[in-house]
Length: 252
Image (tube, rainbow, N blue to C red):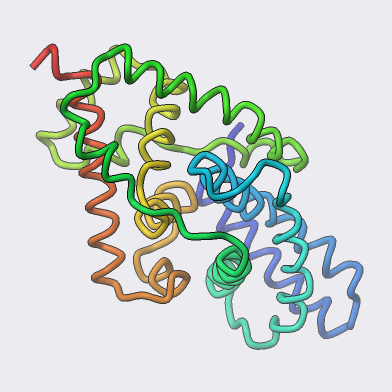
């Protein structure tokens, strides 16, 4: 059974209380063992960031492993747990710290204007070829996720409801739902996300996959609420356009 966002929050709450207790007792070993319980979610997030960098030609395969970044969190959380006042603050702290570590090491990806400027002209074979190339690359990259024991957190939770949010849009989502399985939806969303720039893609993923609020994302990304909302709206619009052009155009 897949862990829900609520499950993750409950785990985070239990873990936070134990971390505070273990730090007071200066029990480093138990502290690290407890922190490990919430790291699969962060590990997946890091893996996706690395995979996107590979897909965009910004990183060579094998240059980094997700644990190169998540391992540092054991030190960061232990040193800062006294200043972290709640499980929500812990949740945000983990993403903020790992984002800082990633951005020190990765070149930020640019917006793929060519892809989106030509989205009206791609034929079905061209879309299928792009998806095939993406899934072939991802098959190798996403094996990084198998290193974590908690497989329930490994797969992203993209659904059409994350893209089509108004009542009118949901009618389009129903049409797509009738013809596309979950894997096809996942592959298409990830393909298009990898064509976005880093801020837009990251905001969408933190909101949909990680269940974080607009306020929490603004804190993690060190930006304003307005900017986060703009990026999320833009990401949804680009994804909606891509679904319509690829899968609904002929039936409209």
